[in-house]
Length: 482
Image (cartoon, rainbow, N blue to C red; front, side):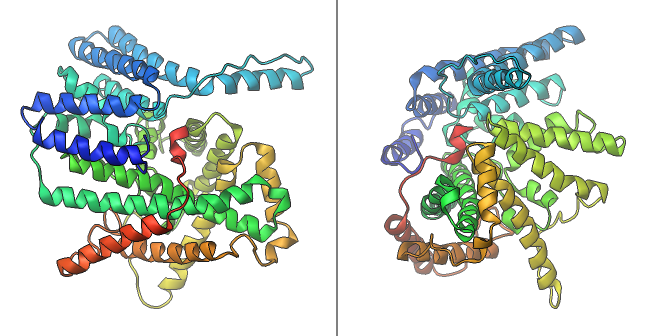
């Protein structure tokens, strides 16, 4: 059930009304209703996979309880290992079995011993990469004695399956979200309005920006050899905006919907394309995943402690694993490796922790310096997106070959029609609004809230009409495949 689908347009208001006006009291009934609604939402794709999320939740619920009861180090390690094996076992089988089987077969073929790979017709359960990481963080934090387990099964199962962020994040920590299931929630009008405002902005990013960009991106990547270099440049530039509008748009909608039900989810994007270097980019892009890898992989490996070699090793491991998390394809591993190569010089020069504050504009040459930094960072991430979007390494190399040909300097034909030119105007307007709201949780949070109500709501109505009139053909959210 897509957030931008007709089915969800009926589902969300119905759940909202029943939640506040039927299941409003007591708290247990409220949580039970959210749990059932979330299972219905998830089962809409394929009800068979409900068993996976229920089993994973049950394992981590009981592991958490037993971790808290035991002081025996060996017993605690066994319990944690059980949680890791169950969660990563499911993830590994459904997401990576075919990748490893085919890579294994190719390796033997290159060595002169051809073998045939056994490929299974495995369907990837939606959201499995997200909820497995969410439950894993729960058991790891209990193991580290940073978190006390809950004995309330309904609250825990609802925390794991909470439908706004279930299938594409943000990846929530139990320390933030679980306590919110354990305290009374009352309807807050201002919070709900703020949630609707963020949903609207997320819908704008997804339907108007991402879905329209997707049509041009698909044309460019469908046949790199038949496109000019200028068309391929437009294609990858538009993919940068497609994936940002798609994924951050989903996160905005998820966070806004959670607010409708009285919950606060963590920020997942912080205007990453305004970053001044790659280090800042990764503090602003998919924050819930990057901080997960920082806390549960990078720091346990030693983080920035130790020799330069150890620091570089840790960075390489984290970025390669991050790439592999995104998909069972060498293109994602190359994408992660490229970002590691972009990031390592910053560590060696001790500049990876610069630009921790919001962007401030000063007079004089600051504009040129800032613009140059943003342009270089955006260019590096955009070039890396080619591997992320390509179907294979051969596809990516063909794309680069066409991109850096002499036809790069020709006039692009891929945006010659009126709809494409309108999209360029919408992109410019989108960037202006994002820039104006760059210090907020999301771009529309405080935009023109000091204006009269008629002006504010007029703006929201116009934005809604633009989305409906000029939205692109519906596209599935990109991160659903991960």
